[in-house]
Length: 214
Image (tube, rainbow, N blue to C red; front, side, top):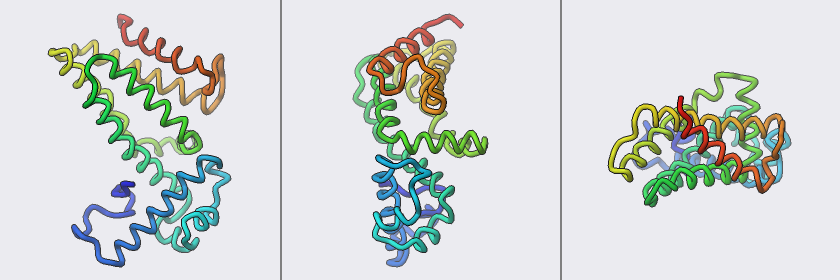
């Protein structure tokens, strides 16, 4: 698990090889993070207590607060770790792709990951609704994805995508993500996230938006 983030779990400005105390601190932080991802498979973030995390991690409540400050700060760290771990999967899909089917692969993989981490994603969305600035700290992960997809599509095509194609791709991705987020937060229907038709129909919507003249 990569915990080299901007939240001070293991600051990048530290020595190349951490001192023993720093190394122990990093491992303790990683145990809390691992515990959270495991517990969030069956608990919502609200249901998850610091005591639960401590028991699962085999560490004290005090050790948690020493490293993360608060449960709200911990949520931000979890989301960063989630995005950082997703970066490797995203890069692999792009590297292995041989045709435009890479877009559907990326979207299907993203949806599957969100569903596996549904309680974490829901907590992040709700926090963002309560504190609009919360999501801005993750923009660097979200905003470069369309650019990388467009660049890889251009490589496979042998010609860069036009500005209009890149724009439509970005809009289609925004629609795709917004539908998932809205369904997770508000459940408006007509399809539910767990419906077997949800992803196939959403992929068709994505394709229609991507190809529509704007």
